[in-house]
Image 1 (tube, rainbow, N blue to C red):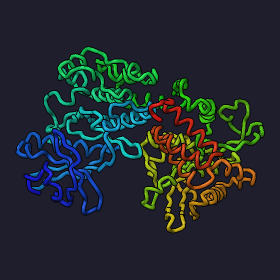
Image 2: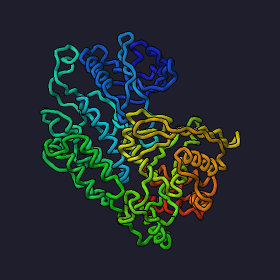
Image 3: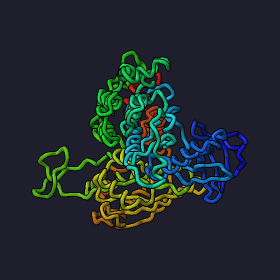
Image 4: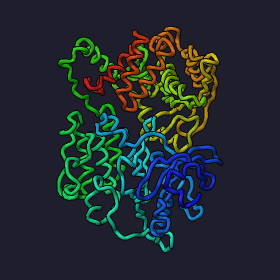
Length: 567
């Protein structure tokens, strides 16, 4: 690739190594960013190239190489992965993971996000920072423009071009080349006081920036957005920003406290680590810790009749019937002395100890995006199926969805032993069900092949494997077969006909209603209440007797606060 093409539109179509430049997707002080095609591995990547004006600047090139070295030390789901670093004809380029989606600044776009979404993204941000800080890396330029959100709600930290290594200095040229004098580096509205004063920079500097990002997500505005740039430095050094609840009264006091602690002027008064911040955000994200917002209904004629019913359904949802996996057939418990631990919420009623199963979701092998809803539908239905008869304890789908967000996990047909250990610790499950499915589409009669594996959550050992085939039109039968085989492997026997009928009655009546309901649940769990509401309204229309669809719809409206602007 010729030097003159770098950083210009003419770069499109040029070749760097075995990467073909497709389009320019970004630019900044430390480089131009392109989407490129890896011709060797046939995948899209992001390539960052130094701007042409800096190609003769050895200091800039050294800084660019430093970014590559820093990124190569980081391996975390919430940090963009580096694939390669090379030089061709004097052009330095960094090859990174290509992350489709939008930046957080585009997502916020001057409007506050729902609190649950702020918390979910905040947890991911804090965990990514914790991983970087553990490797001695301070980002120094954290801002919404450097955070990318994928279509499934995953957050990725980008652009470590201004990052600083804070590892002990060793007697090596490589380490010494990373030392640098203190200079002002960062983006002014998100800078901490110590950055402006050119004093010591450490992990708490990133925590201040994370507080600014949380503030913007929660309010739709940056701290001190009302001030001119000339007044901004003095405000960052001496003044507290406006209270987040003054800009968004729906915020909980606890989230306001967390943001305020991040934005303390003195580093010693902030969270002392990103891990501490992640813990507080995750605690608040837990449903039992989140207070339900007051729901204004006066003057909303459209909801004059529906709001009372919706409130009842919300109560049902809080009680545990919002999701497939939260439903449990009603049976009479037989008290057995000394039979095992007491059931949570039923003190004094000991029951026989049960093994705990978590259905983690299934990898979509079809490559068809329109079939992705089946992963959630199959796992939720199988969770309900395994819970029938109460011979097994199952983990609710809501808990599993939160765990996946917390650990940044995608659906997979297998996980490493280390990941399984983290899942077990997070969920408290003895057994895990995972695997894959292949959905062939309507042109092939809606055929589905479901491959399941039952794994010991502690040892990682596969205890059983089964494959089932069925159709989209008869999902219940497919799941029922899979559940029967897993029950047999676990030695817990079959469910009765009455219990099977109760399970079936709890599920949507047809595949289209199931798809709409499932996609609505996914959006609800990703804190996109508006999209969830639209899907769930269609689900209710497709299957009016389905109580869980009504309950989920009520929860979506609750998350929106019955805001007339959202209608």
